Image (tube, rainbow, N blue to C red):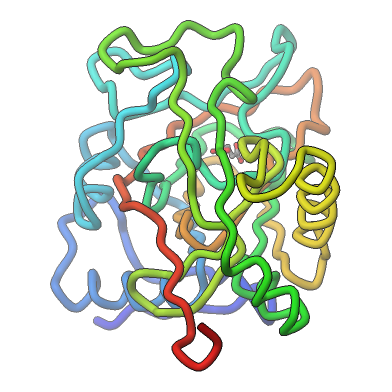
Amino acid sequence: MPISTRKVSPVIGAEVENVDLSLPMTEEQLRGIRDALLKHLVLFFRNQHLSPDQHKAFGRCFGPLHIHPAPLGVLEGHREIVIIKADENSTHIAGEEWHSDVSCDAEPPLGSILYLKEAPPTGGDTLFASMYAAYDALSESMRQFLGGLTAIHDGARNYEGRRPDPTRPGEFPHAEHSVIRTHPETGRKALFVNRLFTTRVVQLTKHESDTLLEMLFRHIENPQFQCRFRWEPDSAAFWDNRCTQHLALWDYYPHRRYGYRVTIGGDKPFCRRDPLSD
Ligand code: SIN
């Protein structure tokens, strides 16, 4: 049976209504989910019951799984599964600022699948924003300017104070990526700088870089580019990390929110220049 989707906002997000993620996917279902992800950028699933192995098996349908470079809590025996947890003892939560996951890696993830077992009675929503919409809303002059720039994404900006994974070289990963990213599958352009990891535009002075980044970080936060997901226990969200950013709201203290994230490996961002404008 083909998957059925219902949009949750005009620009980003759709709920998928008729799929059980714990079961092996048919070719038709997989194609449907891939196509829906490329079209809607983030997909939401309700009433899912996933064991760690089923969660990983679903993630592997889209590529090899990513191992997180920072020592976020991982599920025992499953280093591909990051625990996403907040309760009355937490001092911070994952993803409190707008970001795309692990953009400090040389090859940032393709996407992430977050599965929440526990959600607070109210609050704890995740906001998602389309970076295609953010790019499309820029003036042609600004797009041209940004198209020639690269920026540093520094893991230390987010992970400082947490022990790095000893199996990976360096303190924390950092990488230089194009500010505008061409999506490798859709060919569309997306803004690729984020408040959590991006520290410096390479070709500009520090003052110019700080000012430009602040302008872009604010631009990205326009509610017109967003949707907001209200979690229930046993919900899952699957986002395309190459063309979205997200923000986890921590407005439910002292309640508990608990789940697991599987992240799919990605590739080196690139910006394909328009031949007419080069
Ligand atoms: C994350 O940034 O992966 C966490 C998102 C969330 O907890 O909603």
